[in-house]
Amino acid sequence: TDDYIYAAEDQAGFRIFDKSDNSTIVDFYDSLYENMRIIIPHEEENLLFIYNRYGESTGILVFGIDDKENPQIFPGIVGDTSGVFDMKTITHEDGIEVIWSINASSDKILLGGRYAYDEENQMWTWTGGSTEYTFNYEIGKFDVEGDYFYICSDQLGVTIVERGEWEPIELGRFDTKGLPQAVKVVDNFVYVADRQNGVVIADVSEKTDPFVVKELETSGYAQEIDVEGNILAVASGGGGVYAFDITDPTNPVEIGRIDDSEIGYTYNVHIYNGIIYASTRLGVAKISID
Image 1 (cartoon, one colour):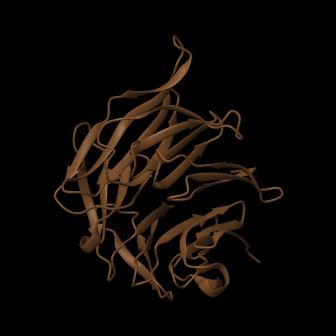
Image 2 (cartoon, rainbow, N blue to C red):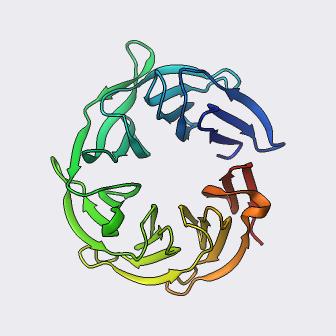
């Protein structure tokens, strides 16, 4: 965010850093939370959503961060939170909608529930009311734009689904040569981290007829992806971090790359105000774009 970096540290809990001097504000660890994998801050409400994969408190946890040096555990999100693969949050007038995908024996996306402030009891709480979308194929990470979901579908490529009242409406799909790991949709283009195939860019202006417009090779496995303005950043595992200029999405230009020998095996990237933040085996790398 503007002032802080939030890092889920797997078996080490989570950490909050001050961006002004890179100092650690809090290093939170508790043996109840053994495997923190996904972290989403909502600073306007002073809330932190974290998915914990293992331990006595498995599921989607919520922390209050009014005092960032002393996070407080709030009531978590219960029901069907084992095996969460990806998670998104969307702020509405009546609370924060939490959406997550589950990649297990039954592949599904759960959506529509709210984490809201209870005025009567003066506390944040999960109001429930989730809608369950079940699919007959393996699903992974996804992105959301309005009423549309863009879902990594393993061997099937990327599937475009419209939010229905009770069930999803499948609109279109485009295949990729690799195994799609993560997806980002911006201005009618979808950017896919396609594992061994690098990066795939598809035109989705017609959601019933999407098509691939460009493929970009990367060293290592493309695992995560982010876009801000005309910059595309890619976390490519053993290939480190790539940055591309996507002023023309059909003809991206590589800006540069930082190898994993310098920053470590790279898992994730976020672009924020023109700076790339990469999570690696060595920690968090802050990368300027020239």
